[in-house]
Image (cartoon, rainbow, N blue to C red; front, side, top):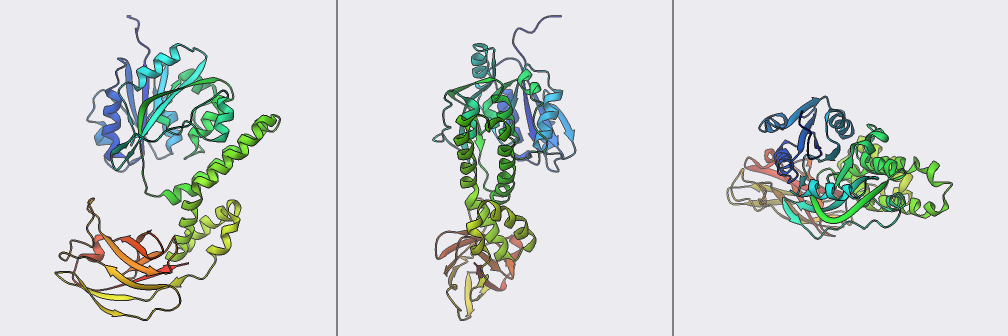
Length: 399
């Protein structure tokens, strides 16, 4: 049997309902300049087009599992892979063609290194933003990791298989911090390599940031708590350990507080009760502001017509929360309000006294609202709310 002249590299792509991006991830993996790569897609119980997209590529191995989380999917791919080296590429990210080749060249010069990390670009709305940069690693990778995750994007890392197996792979109990937990366990044991070449593109999503932030803070604090036994007898690590926790809390503060405010203003008691303990533990100074009475603005009533929307009645404002202007900009019934380039519709309103987390109510239903300052708010309008001509009403709820 002929021996393989080049080391086999396994590119594992875990995917849960990211079928719309999966083809780009697969094609970026198949385009690697390194001649010996296998690509494995692990479908983590997707209900979208993931399976059909993967089936377009006959050389790609497709594995299905019931929904168990990204950590379990990565471990499944690791178990099924045959490569000496492994890349974990999220289904909505992309590799650059030279990613594997660059990592292999550097690992070949340092047989004791556990993995090599490159740099990444951001993809925002599909457009490349090359200005993003990761902090450099200096001398002690574990100490640097305590102070802040200098790896950040999983796809930027090429791992030795032996290093992954030595620490037991990813922790399936971590859904958003499994990579950070893994980096801690590896860097306590082995050297790593960092370089400045861009090897991957990370797609930034704005959806669900608040909800993800709640889980991220909880999990990150638990991961840092698990470092105590190693940090406590080493005074040089105390300050980075504390600094790393502060960095995490600072990064997610606004998203978590906004999620709590939105839950209050929407009247979503279940979500508010879920978020409040996190706020009380990590941002206790913010609790009193979240328990203020929710204020409701006056109501603007209007009629949708073929040419626009005419305000028919404006109730008197009470207190400091006053809705005084809206801009539906209807072209024809069914075409929406302030039609956006991505095909969605938005309702623009001006309301004095609104705070971050304020929610626009349209036809009695809360809308996803963006706060743009002390008076300007925009809200995404579902199609079923603007499809027909007729009477509508708008008001605001804010803390």
